[in-house]
Length: 79
Length: 528
Image 1 (cartoon, rainbow over the protein chains, first blue to last red):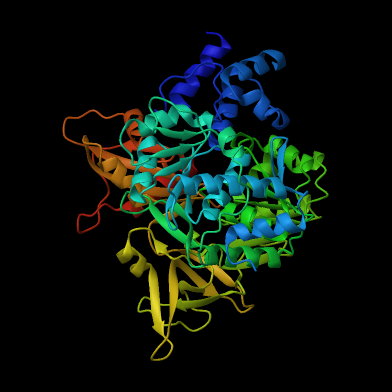
Image 2 (cartoon, rainbow over the protein chains, first blue to last red; image 1 turned 120 degrees about the vertical axis):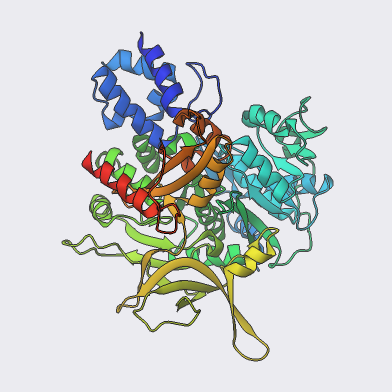
């Protein structure tokens, strides 16, 4: 599975908890209220575990985490 | 004279017409521009049938319109009711119907949820902030239409300081949220206390971290306007990223910060504070929950330029005690006190028989004074239960709000907070009634019994856990229960973990032993 699919799977199964059924890779996860501050932390932990990549605090910013696509792009660039 | 909340903006617009009143994401409004927009919105609302005392909903992501909406509604003589922009539709519909909202203020970004919300009859007759849509009521106005209205003078509605100004809905133990009513007087009492206590001036830049439906936001807007200061509204998305947030604090040159401790702990731990220039910061205010002393000590060491203050008060009282944290003992992590009663309030500590206890003994804190709410919307009995009346002479009485919080007066004159009398808890700064979550679980027909309890997260806050017993021969998954709850509760009230089990520990009378469940879960959490 590519990164985007893995991330999408994680967001749907673990973070959305049944809220709004459909999301796309480019949807804004924050404005739609799909992930909250705890969700961001869970996401960082998941990335570190699944991809073995330590996300530095200064990279945990809106620009890198606002959508699944943005996150996949960030991971491609950094890892 | 300022006896109504929008008059604070009027006064600032006269004194500082060209100074910025609100900012967000690089956009801003001066006091004069804000005042013009408030008056135009108020006039349109009045033209559309809003009367004194009506409730007008605000369904917005944070934006410049947040400020225009809340003041514009009050300027029209109505009370604003902020709706959580991320709440489940069913919960929004409940609030709209509970307080009879006919006019709703929103933006295009909420159109999808709005269509779903108004697809069923809700009572909403007029929507401001979006153009005409087939699913929406006939009367819709865009912001462009509002802002191009010719009149920008105050509509002049005859209201007094006793009129309703805003209603904040919080978690209620019966399963439905309850509306806490504040008047112009109670809002202003708090704002005046805040502006004085923290010495706010027109040169200050206040953060607005909290959402509008959370009472911390009233300080950011009301106390800010009283001083003619600028309020920097922080977009919801940025509040989730400590590194983005600390950059915003720096770039906006925030001088007075106000948030829940959770946000500050995040900033401390992941915000790279050391790399930011926060030289403008002079006050860090926090409320909503206990700030664990070890983190507060670290934060104070990181930000030596700022003073720190702990504000305490249920939404029903705005804020009623405060404690300036000037020094922390280096060798003790004893929780900081909630401090002294605000100068414009009075306090009383009573035992279970409503008798005042001697200083130093534990009792429930009761609060009287200008900051106290008017009551719960549409619930006279609940309101009466929330108050304690004491005759001062044959004609007069003092009315106190029962906080439900247990406190103890220390020798140094500060109150210490000891916990709740009931089953209300805080999770990451949000107030949650555990019984409301149980009620929501029990509304799922495949559930026989449910218990909800808090698990301390070791950071001074709580995580919520639930245990349920399914009906006989039913297979339940925690995922389907989460889906069920997500339709009824805000996301912060959804348990972090739901355990499906065959039976609960019981007391000798057969009642669910929630204490034991909690102890088991805490022990399990510790062993990991």
